[in-house]
Length: 449
RNA sequence: GUGGCCAUGGUGUAGUGGCAACACAGCGGGUUGUGGUCCCGUUAUCACCGGUUCGAAUCCGGUUGGCCACCCCA
Image (tube, rainbow, N blue to C red; front, top):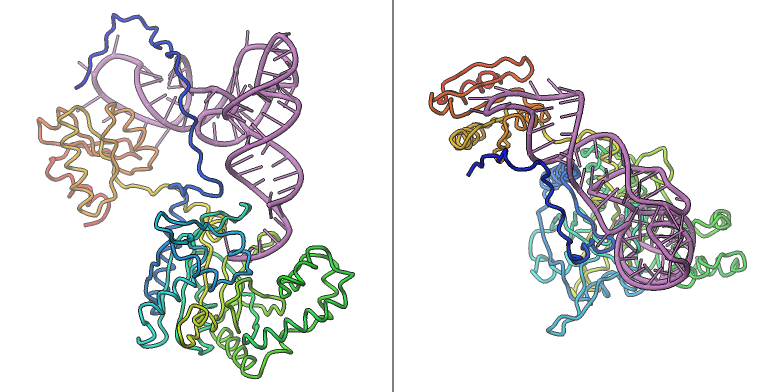
């Protein structure tokens, strides 16, 4: 109901802001949780499309597991000693008395699903992919959130090294397709036995150097000796050089397996580096382990892994499968990848350009514009509107900002005449066309016919 | 979990004990139907709670949140 302005009224409009009562305090997002706004969503969309395309092309099938699982799944699967389980899980008891946790990582639930649904009776390997939110109650910092998303692939039920290589390849290739150059850092930690033997040797070695270790490193020695190898402490750098090397502790099969993985990577042209000090935090890893890091001149950027993965032949038994299920997989951290994408492709965040803007004037014009917009859209023309606006001027401003090449204008007069104005926004010229032929006319102008 | 820096409109900032300012964005106008410029209007519980003070955005304490590093990880 259009209102007439009341020229009689005094100009002093502002109705003296009422002595507002204090409203409730504004609600902030929870620590470490964030909104993904439209400007960022275009990067997410591109990454999702590349991830989906690649995984489906390689025969991986989409899976979605519950955000909430029994806490025991992660305690057993990820490892009681790991930081993830010890201090980072969102765990609570439900009203029904179940002990549950928000999913902190994607692999254990997928293995649980594989076992639960008897996928070991399907042709092996079973190949699955996911794109899901994860939750870890860690202190937020650069590239780290309490809710974060991972894209990952898992290949279950087969121990062939070509699959290890395929995982590293897919992680690397997804990034490449999304416009992010990366390098795969890769290592082998062998079987559970060889890894255990190596761990003992490592502890024995560092015990003799205990007096040279920092406080943090002494803790690592007890809690997580493998991590001593990627300690950032300066004094560690030389100690490390003398330390036992994992390669010397691998059994022949593990070594052969690893060599084959590397050969496949060579064949596929994957950019990779051997890193004898690379170990991974989760208990379930065996044999191949890798991380994917961005190529960057900035050392701080280059060290922040975009993803990681490897083989985890021991996981199924930890979860009670009753028989071994060799498997491997990888996951990429979406937020971290998107940060790199923004750097590589700053323009992607800009709003999409539209070809035609439909402007209207008056109630009749608006109704007609409503219909014509839909007609244009249905014909595959990228149209835009601001139907809720009344002033033609405001609408033209919007059309201009969108970079629309053409404007279709319908007012009362045009409705009565059964016409529409087609305006060339660049030239500033316009013509009157039959309203029924607007779509046809626009198509012609856009060279679509 | 430990430590450092920080918090002023939607965004970016100025104000460092005495009237909260500027730019951009948004919305509404510039005489009943046409865009990039221009002009006008409008947009703030100074994160929250408390303390010191005649007086606090400013000083102090706490809380919440952000950024960064460590631990760890994607």
